[in-house]
Image (cartoon, rainbow, N blue to C red; front, top):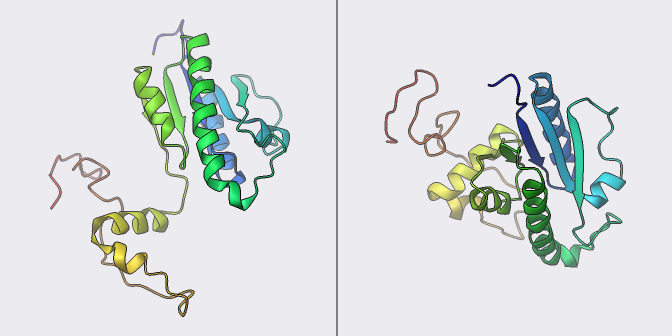
Length: 190
């Protein structure tokens, strides 16, 4: 890294405490490495005081309106909220990046796949850190790799049940493009 130019990241987070906390912890780690971080979330999340930290050198905040600035989202508006979050967030993120051409990477939390589209459009690298427990990651993997019928079996007479999944690698090869992180090999899956 060049000494005269500080790295600049944008962290985009879904406006919920379970997304904001790990994203903010990641921001703090980047700042300790000398990176400037712009933390980007909704006006409602920022106003609700979800980020409880003294101001940090190397951290700035940017917000956008998703149409629910008071923070209350009626359950029947979930699809509408997602659409507004994508539409308004995409535009605001593009405006933020274009206003400061020094941004070098976009990091985003789950439920915001549109951020990767924005990054691609602006020719910036993007990353999705996994903020959920590893078991959830495993369930997603198996859901999309042959177990959707077992996992997705919503039966009213079984509100909760146990399912047995095959034992697999801690991090599925499909996510790592066939690279085994333990030895650096490039074996292909299966």
